[in-house]
Length: 146
Image (tube, rainbow, N blue to C red):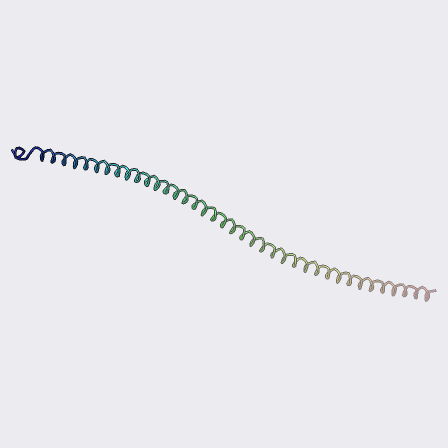
């Protein structure tokens, strides 16, 4: 009934205004849909980038862990080499001490041999002196008995 009171021209203008508003709303909705789609695409792109970054971070962690293990292996090898060097130094010191003891023992043996030879020479001189004395006695006895 209300439509009966509104003149047809005004009714047509109202309808035209409603149509324009509806068209504007449709366009806004289409633009919103486009923005929503753009936002969805951007969000998907960001999600993909975040996943790629996560993978790269994981790979970097793995490389860092491998690097840490390699450094630990090198450190352990250096420690073993240091211990081997220390053992070699200790063995060299012991060998030097043994060589010094052997040299001293050899010098003492040479000294003892020299002393033994000196004593033998002294005994030989005594024996030679005794022979001379015995010869002299024999020669005296031979002259006196004749």
